[in-house]
Amino acid sequence: MQLESGGGAGLGLAIFFLLISAGNAAAADSANGQRLAERWCAECHMIAPGQQRASDTVPTFAEIGGRFDETTLATFLASPHHSRMPNLSLSRSEITDLVAYIKGLER
Image (cartoon, rainbow, N blue to C red; front, top):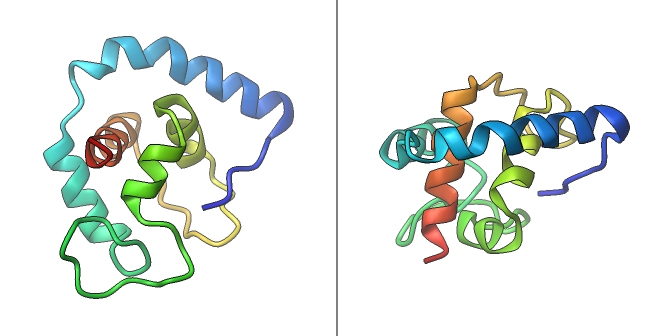
């Protein structure tokens, strides 16, 4: 996963997610995040321990969770322009749930 700077727009998204992250942290549903990951991410990423198939050219969710904070992950997932990923068009609550799932894997 390559996180790129989006200039002013990226900073604006980062600030936006920082402001809403405190309010949404308690509302995050990591079980829903796991369902989203199974649906959208498991074809390429190793999203859970014991997963049988994934690409060896992309980081695992545990690696991603250990490398990036919640705000960075949320900003990246909200961006409609991923170089190697499909445009997922996730809602804010889906992003919050997926980030909660990813960050939960690093523990």
